[in-house]
Image (tube, rainbow, N blue to C red; front, side):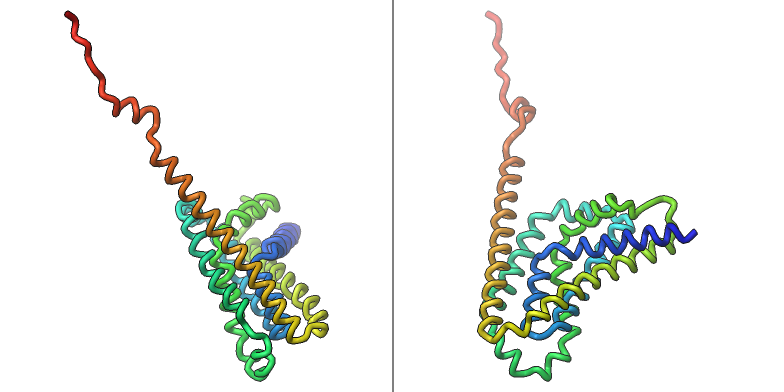
Length: 239
């Protein structure tokens, strides 16, 4: 009786960890905030990302096929828009002075909600994670006909727990080396992470525009059947 609960709970924890593990822009943001503002700022950024991952998992589990169709139909536009948003954040991070946040430590305790919101929005702006979640659901047999609603409650709790555990561990280890960083080191970290985000965003815009023009040219080229129908047929009259 308890075996299905254990199976789906463990599957959920593994899915939560694997969804959070890829070190994308959100991971960079968590590291930057942990170094600049402390461990809990980075952790709560990860909490926001975890709730976004959970929302995508719920969409997948509820079988909202129209969401997948919308992503497939607008994938290039979403990729380009998301890349421009990353460019804005990359420029902000590149120009940010870490000493300014160090001068006002008393305000950092009031920014956890902002950390959660930005972490959520950063992760939610990458809807392509939905396809990764679909593959994980298939790999770990998360959607099984014998599971009941209360089994899935345990599974989704496991996903959230796994994702938060990942960010807790990451921010714990990053915070351990935080003491070895001075203001100049944090400034350099901001520049490096900001540059990485800008490169990722630039590549996203390039690949999105490249794929868009390829698709456009393929649709604009007439097919053989269209050429056949559009070519005028000359009837040769017999003498």
